[in-house]
Length: 321
Image (tube, rainbow, N blue to C red):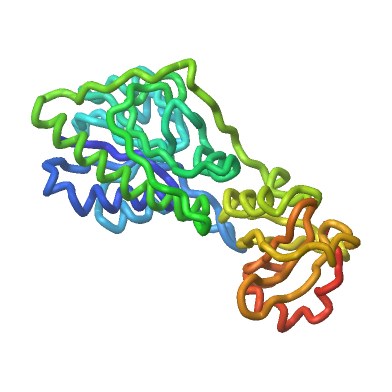
């Protein structure tokens, strides 16, 4: 069986890597890779391929980066004679003419328990909502967003240390395993395995995240802010302003359980103390204390809190906003 893989970011690269390494074992061939066009990066705006495209080129796979999935794109893909389209985080909508190129249709990896959390940010929303586990779904590609039949599902327990990055990476690997099983079973019966229709009434949706959404409101609770920091790492990364209005990124923090009576008089956002051994830099919130452990000032590298405090002796007592 021949497949086309479609994907773009780092997490999708993990899925492609697993497929490349296991294609012989599961009896399929990757005939080509679809990815987003190169983007201009760096001071000199050098065109840079996506992580998926860069890996595929390294492995000698045919790579296609059309701006649109139009007639010209179909003319490129059709001669490859692929049986199945496999997608994870590609970023384009597949129309009926494009899907018709594949006798077995297309399948998509989506990191949620569909129909819950349809859309582009399911992992972020699961973290924001304080979910105990994250679903991993393989669905058929349909003309409506994330509305295809469910072929296989699994889940992973969400740990307090998990971020969007760590959960996406796990989902990418586990999803690739499920995809390989589907391909093998489908090849054996000569058609794509039968899926289960989604319950439309149970559908919820997620939306694009903006930088403004990642700004911390220190009137919120320590629990809410901690969830935000995990959900928005690594992109766009939570941030706030220091007392001098300079932006400050916060990449890791935990809710700290300590007596709060002595801190009640302080304004929310006040940098209270520095714990050198465990919980980081203490900041008062609207409900509870947050311990910041990784942060970054403008123009500086991301730092562990101990390294940060070595160069920020006057940080304690300031008010973040």
